[in-house]
Image (cartoon, rainbow, N blue to C red):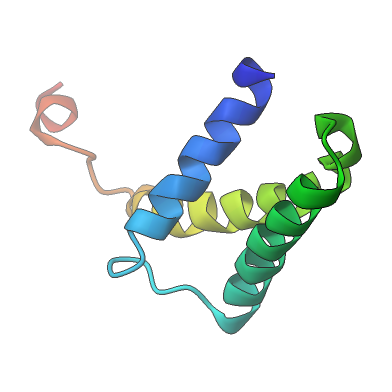
Length: 91
């Protein structure tokens, strides 16, 4: 579970920490609030993790939106055919 769920939680925590750099949309904020509230609620009523898994799709959507925001500058440079750095520009 650590191998599969750990990176998702790490990216979600990064998303929360980088809220000043990457402003979340209203939809992303709603999904994040739903995920956190549902995680807290189900942790009280369900002791087994397998009963909490139906809310993982919210986490996957939030992380996917964050990765898309994170990759936008890089994709824009690639589409403009600009070199990524000096090392690739010299070769």
